[in-house]
Image (cartoon, rainbow, N blue to C red; front, side, top):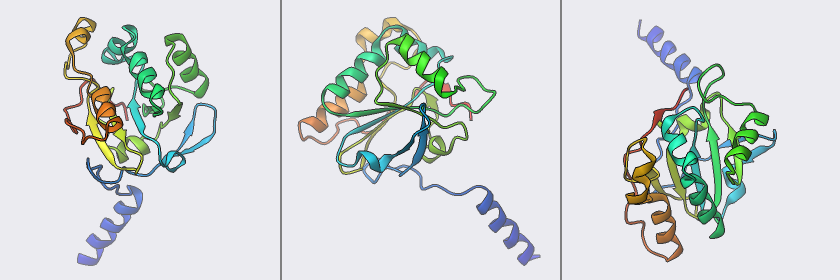
Length: 199
């Protein structure tokens, strides 16, 4: 019986490979993905650069809050102006809300006048699960040494109301500003908010 249970455990481990949970202050989980142009993208491609990861789903009201108001685009532009790489990741499974082909993902970004450095398609949820991405949006900031320095919401106003953006503290920009000025990130973690990632 013990052998049978052990065999089941091993089979389960092979079917569902374990990922090390992302821990702020430690190395960000490495990943390889495919972008909207069908090109292979590795996190290691951006060694030495600050990287922002943004999980998105075009049908989510919380995503619409930040894109419809222009807040996400302004955050992207500010990050990239300081030399950061911005990777938008779509982990919605095929047939679920937010799933996108490469062409559709690019069309959505163009219509929103979004400027991510790249869009990564993750329909099997491998990258999302590696980062334990829970919501759209869910934001992560990785420093030039590859260390995860921020994980959480884009700001501290967990609502779908665009009117709240004016009084919100943009925690992604705050983390990037701390990095830029050689300070420890003052708020390294926050509770992510939004729609659940549609794995």
